[in-house]
Amino acid sequence: MATEKLLPRDQVPEQLKWNLKLLFESDEAMKAALQKTLQRVAEFTQLSGHVGSSAANLLAALQSDKLINEELEREYVYGFLRRDSDTTKGQAASLYGEVANALSQVSAKMAFLEPEIVAIDETELVQYLADEPKLGEFKFMLTKIRQQKAHILSDKEEQLLGRANKSLDAADDIYNTLNDADLDFGMVHDDNGNGNEVPLTHGNRSQFTESQNRDVRREATLAYEKPYHNLRNTFAQTLNSFISSQNMQAEVRHYQSGREAALSGEQIPESVYDTLVKSVNEHLPLLHRWYALKKKVLHLDPFYKYDINVPLAGQDLLKTTFEQGKEMTLDALSVLGPDYVAGLKHEFNERWIDAAENKGKRSGGYQVSVYTANPFILLNWTDKLYSTYVLAHESGHAMHSYFSQQNQPSEYADAPIFLAEVASTFNENILTDYLLEKYANDKQALIFILEQSISGFVGTIYRQTQFAEFEHQAYQAEQNGQTLTADYLDQINGELVNKYYGPAVTESGTITQSWAYVPHFYMNYYVYQYATSWAAATALSQGVWQHDDHALENYHKFLSAGGSDYPIEILKQAGVDMTNDQYLVRAFGVFEKRLNEIEKLLRA
Image (cartoon, rainbow, N blue to C red; front, side):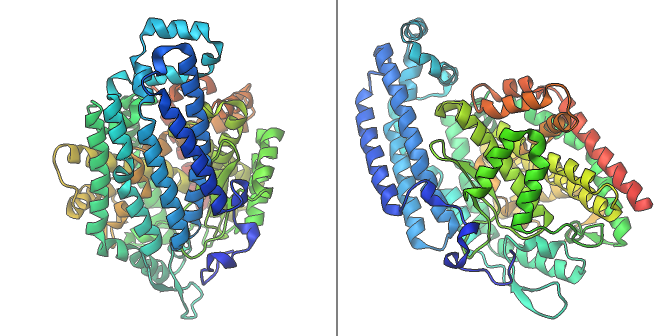
């Protein structure tokens, strides 16, 4: 599917694009639906000042809030996906802006709900629950809101913050527009040795950085870093603005820090974050051993950062087209049973996926779900095995949404981020086990697959924890009055890069790129959850793959639970306790086993 020249959106085959008619027939239909939702919001505001006056009013408010959120989700996601399909199209950007602006207005108008729920007397609320059985559905939701009592502001203050949401989120929108629509990485030489030049993009970068030709990967790496370095002050300002807004909101809501604010809503102890960083730092020697092995096998001294992704197998094996990737994913994940396979077939056959890279399309990959419709997946396919891993990863998100939506009311259907990444990285682990079994007699394929697994572990546990350390230091510095300039961010990032990469790797290019290119820094303490999730998923996937008693049954319960309980409790029920470091110790045990296996194959 990879092409030398990016196609405009209208020339991409329909079967490679998501079907947004599953949401609305047209932009006009979405706009009409949005106006009806806004009218519903106007009716909802009549409950202001009366939410807690009776069980009937409380139920009416919660049911109306639920319906409005379902409708807004469908409308917002439609605009969001239209924009991300081609960020250069003014019409799509305008449509997204319209629905985002409406969402901000709605947030302000409905902000009275939580303060009024918090204000209900405890004895009175117990009586309401006894008098009105239909309130039972919302009991956990009410508990979560009331547990945040110390951090919910007055009606007017909540309205003010709700009205300011669009401005407070502006840094994220500016960053994404700059990163996806405006950056130009220029032309680089292809890997065919014929002197041809091709445009470098977010999507095809990995093809060049994994090249056996050192000149090709160096040229591509430096070209990719250049615009980030040239705009380093702008990127620093957007990140400073975002972190400042998050810290401000945390302070206004009476939290001690931005991290406490980010973790408290789902009752995640901050010790989980600190335990992750501590455990990963204790296991850095394994990562350094991996880099030293690559340096030795590849006979590269110095071993630069742009040499890290060269496959030890000597070539890029197991390339897969999009169709082949779907078949491989379906086969590997069949271990999860017929219901899971049926869900995947819906995803693959009903155009829930936008697969091909095109001009202006948002980079990377993600999944977003719509309770009243289905999940949607964005990919930028490159025919590399890596793309199949991304498909398996995002399909894990999609099936998590799919099963939660089938088993939970909409207010509990979305799993919190702390759980969401478990389902996605679980699939990556299963895909690795499947491939290792399938190619058990092919030495070169095994080396390639083991490296994919090790690279996934490095990228998800080590790299994301490195990012988490950087993020937390940046938040703390800003809270203490430090302006996050490009020089300051380069300084703290550089220290972490040297610590994580270790003595075998020689730095090259600019360290600005390794913090400026990370969109997840605009998701407010998101990145650490990749690492905790991968470690938890390692334990869960091992149980399912080895057919341990009740492992599959417990995992399906996890998929169906959505956000119906606190994440720590849902994972405990699935068999993983995140309140100590044992799940991390087990995960690093698997990593060390993979490292031992590839060392043995390379010696043979």
